[in-house]
Length: 399
Length: 181
Figure 1 (cartoon, rainbow over the protein chains, first blue to last red):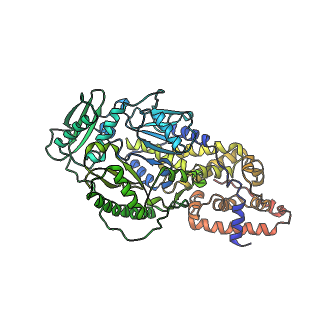
Figure 2: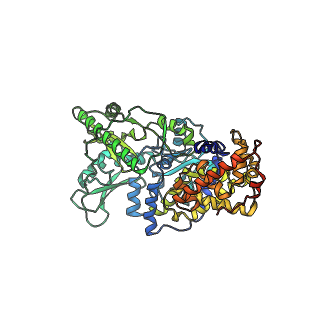
Figure 3: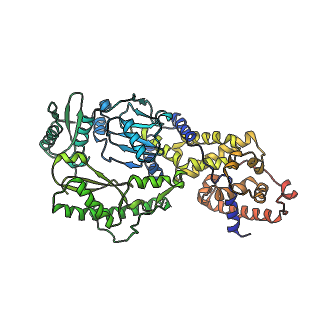
């Protein structure tokens, strides 16, 4: 018997090739494991190893855990609040929630203000039957987490508190927070700088637009006196005192985080979306695929913005123009249908390391509705987050 | 703060990516009633020793699963033959529609544990030689040699089997069951 025939016969005799563990039992096990004490907490070197390890882990694992990133800039206010003041933001201002659907989580913004209701709507959109859901908050801040009620609190961290039924965020305050953190204001990006007068003017204009006349705007530095120079300014919205506090972060003048301007290689890729999957490629190959897709996106960005410079368009119109331009270059949005089809694949459901063939030709298009309040004509911005996530913003902002 | 929260998240990603492979690995080696316990012990051990992980996570996890399985087998069924194990695994049998290759399973049973292990890590667990070498704790080249010898031995046993697939008496008497630790 040949070596190949013997191997084939062995493979065919595998008694567990189609064995699938019970998903609920696996979830319960994960919760049990993570609730036990780890053997060693990461120290100074452990932290670095963690990062290295996280980078080594397969992309599909990250993918399974981040399905639709609806807001990449979310949490800026929360993060700054924690960094400057410590503690947690006011409870009813939790800016976003994580909606866990099967193995995926979407970081979503509110529609009704009730995270359970809004997450249930995402379940319906994903084509799934909505199970009983529960929302949880962490005493350490961050987004609320909505998951199956039967699973209990999230299996990471500790101290989770279940939000009572019918709990809602303070929606006008959350929306104001979103507007201040909109990429078009220039205050959303950690590397952007804003002059103090401009930041105050912007905040006041938003209060007028949102019909919040009783609110006030204050300005302070996080460390020392205010600077007249261009600095990063972090907005902090406090619904309890009805105050927008602008915090000038004292640091060296940052440079605007502009996208790379290198030229595309001209390498052609198959533009047709494919339902077929491939094994997750090596890290080096993923880097190459990502860089190539980024180059294509930047070309599409340049072409679209050039067209938009000739006429003043709304955000939806700019997004439509972008979509056509991107499609002509073989790029397509990673829609909910795209992810749904991927998640329906048997190999994905079996937790195998697979990706859609055209994964790196897919981008996430984010329209910034809040930027409708900030004036100006709409343009596109491709964000290079240095990871595997290609995000394109359509917002009212300068190209 | 990042490190404290990142550790469980990274472990969770690893769990979700490789739970199925670990589960199947264990299911092939211990009786059905013990699979969940062995898998649980594997991941609890992995979590306790997570800081030791260097390189690819799957071979590391299977290495732990292998030792946990071995401890289980040593304690409860030290000399259980592969055929008996499979016969005692209704969970596997009821889920598998594949025709049972009795002759092959009999031949596998005639191999030493270490021979069987190298064959199955590649054929059933789908590991590369390099990954499988990490599981059994040897170099890739040493593993390749073991795999070559195990294939040759399996082919010899198969070719010497009578048509009914039973194991020749000589081979049966020569079986030495080794711990797989």
